[in-house]
Image 1 (tube, protein in one colour):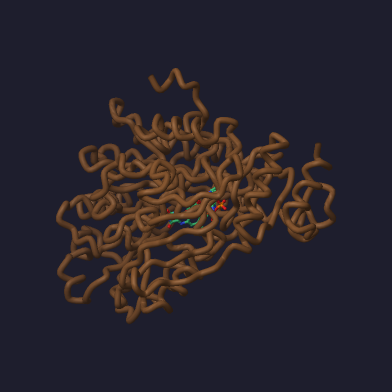
Image 2 (cartoon, helix red, strand yellow):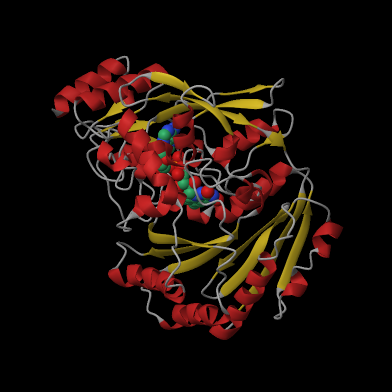
Length: 471
Ligand SMILES: Cc1cc2nc3c(=O)[nH]c(=O)nc-3n(C[C@H](O)[C@H](O)[C@H](O)COP(=O)(O)OP(=O)(O)OC[C@H]3O[C@@H](n4cnc5c(N)ncnc54)[C@H](O)[C@@H]3O)c2cc1C
């Protein structure tokens, strides 16, 4: 069976031996540059198609041989889902599909699905200073970003990366090449915007673009050496500040840190005077060390975020979780105290751990939660907890992060908490329910229509369901 797959893939890829790696290929092991070292994966084949037609050929070979398929974009899935997330899949590495063009008349950019965010940002800026919303890490792939969400510093102004997708070229499970847009297969465009990896391989995106901000203010307020009580106070002040419903959409803020330092960091896409008028520094009852800089242009601003993200981009052994906080269910003072008490008193067994608390709302909430497969539109802020270890992640570390989320869950026994599919947690037993919430039943229907053999699969992809479930 493996030999038949290899023969079929080679025929699909113009007999190019450097475009197909199987376990018997000499460079197979060095071709596996997985991101989360805690999840080793041995694919059945790693392929490097150079065109949409070649992608279709790969999908055909895989489907005929009953192999599962995942597209690999930037390879930054927390669960290595671009590699399949489990051994034995056929990987469609899109690295060669990295074309770019820009249409001045529409303001639309056509972007190869194998491009990384860094190159997309630069190309857009060089096309008359254009931009789209995206996260801060330049090595993340547009493929995984624009099919899952893509939330970043301009999301409060412009929404997520998915909100910029106008149309796309995709390869379906039956290897058909189709275009999806509001008028062609709108159900698939809807599924693309939050769950694309479960349905097809996107080979090209057409993105609606915005005028890039003309610089702005970059700021970091640091709180060092605080005990748990003082850290909790910083969080309380932070939550009060970000829960103001009138906060400017040009304002972006995150809390990053722990164990030793908490940083309140972000950007304001406006003048220094307008930033100062927000009163952020005065919102904290404990005085921070302040670093506020006016940044003259968009690429310099993006470079600051890229620099901050550099360490996180490297492969590591880690475990991570996400959790949403809604505007009508803010954390109480007691819950915040319990969180920080928990963090300082519970064994973690990690080299390092980090909390990242990111305000969303604004333009993110201006889209209905059923308008795209990504459902989490009303979230006020996300809490992302991450722990990296020196080798295989231990149960102590997993329990440490699970227990942290439990502190919050237990304060809201009647509240449903969800998770972001961009930061998958492979240990969640109900991942699809938490990633896609009320949009899951519609996704299951679309999956069953277009991919009823579940060709596009990872351990937490949208499942195929019996049609009885639709009634
Ligand atoms: C260091 C780091 C920083 C991050 N920062 C942010 C952030 O600021 N904001 C944010 O929202 N997220 C962020 N993320 C999460 C990131 O957006 C997601 O993990 C994203 O899915 C990664 O995309 P990728 O192409 O790099 O990954 P991959 O592992 O290649 O792909 C991830 C998933 O997307 C699917 N996929 C990829 N390309 C395609 C395609 N062309 N067609 C169909 N399916 C495809 C894959 O099959 C897989 O299921 C970050 C992740 C890391 C590791």
